[in-house]
Amino acid sequence: MLASDVNNPQFIGAVDGDKALIVHFYVRPVQNIFASSKANQAIYEDVIYVKINVPGLKEMEVDTPARDDHQRRFPQQWQHFVNRTQGDAREVGTPVAEWSILTRSQAEEFRALKFFTVESIANASDLNINAMGMIGGMSPYALRERARAFLQAAKDSALPQHQAEELAKRDAEIAMLKEQMAKLADSVKAMPQAQAPIPVGVPAATPAPARKRGRPTNAEIAARKTVAQGASPG
Image 1 (tube, rainbow, N blue to C red):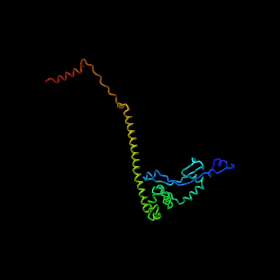
Image 2 (tube, one colour):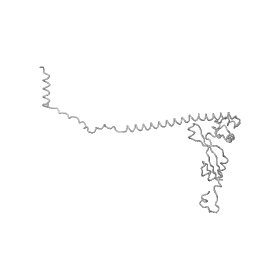
Image 3 (cartoon, rainbow, N blue to C red):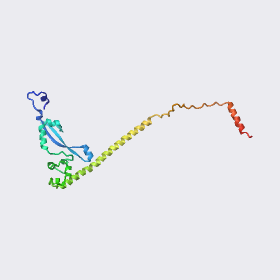
Image 4 (tube, rainbow, N blue to C red):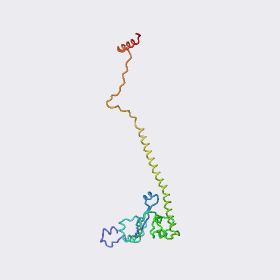
């Protein structure tokens, strides 16, 4: 409803602006990045979107995940969506519409049979697989084997990519560590060489003064005489 209508309920000629909008709720397969990385294959989830158009204004289109307020704002369009998709289970996996070997009409046939993902076909029991019948000229058993091969190929192709991402992450961490070590080494080289500190309580050693050369002292003369007497023969 227009803001002017909400603020002025008694306004003459007030109209519900939402009635002039074209509103369509639908389901869009959206890839779950976290689940895809963990499973090493493309994992999609069905997400309910709402598309809102203003007639005559293409640039005014809104296409966004549906919220609770969208359901309350457009109750008729929401109820139409619920009636149209009632019983349409929401399964996580690769939607059949994303499987390149199927045409759009074949994908719709699978959805009508409640096979919404390639995984649901690959994991179907013999009893359930017989309910498919011949779709696209293939027996249901052959189709199940192709579904299994498709998922295995997707997993195998995703693994090298995952490993490459992990190696790139490791190399980036090693390069960062090397850069930090180089900066630390440069900082140590730039520090001035510090002298060893003198322990507290120990006086610094001072060199003995050099004795001036001249006449020997009495003590030195007496010491020389003693040495000379000891060296004389008895």
